[in-house]
Image 1 (cartoon, rainbow, N blue to C red):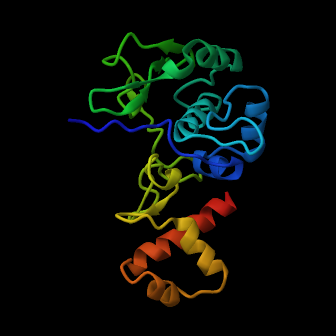
Image 2: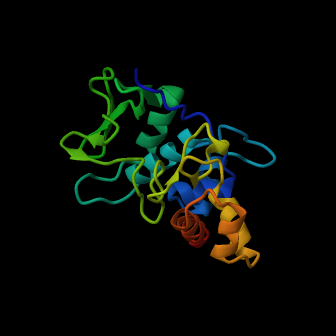
Length: 211
């Protein structure tokens, strides 16, 4: 039986959501103020976005970007899509994975799919060509496997990037590195973890801070 990926889980503050989604922080806040893509975990005090919000942010930015193969979708069309579909923007495919319930024509028009068979396969945004919302996006990492030895799982450690087969987050590892711990010293603190995985964790966090 396929395992359903609970995209409504995870909790990311603004800077984290922007870096993981591949959307400028100013755009993230602008879309939140305009109630285009609102933070679904917490919309007040400290705003928090879910893992599903990250995918929606990527989808909206892709629709609004100039592309050689597909025309830019107008903001009116994007808002109509989000308003009309809401939580129904996503459905569960036959493999148990959440996928957008839309098709996009080459002219940029957004069309609602008739059902799972016509919805995006998890890789498809418009017929005949592929666009994977989970894959690396501009300078943002893969949202499932950000590095070979790292993983992101919405229901694990609040959706934070972590070392595979562990609950040790990349933030914790990078935090030690910023405090002056060497890789060897971090390895001593976590003898069960692979040195290459710890190195990847530090590298990932550096790339997210630079985004």
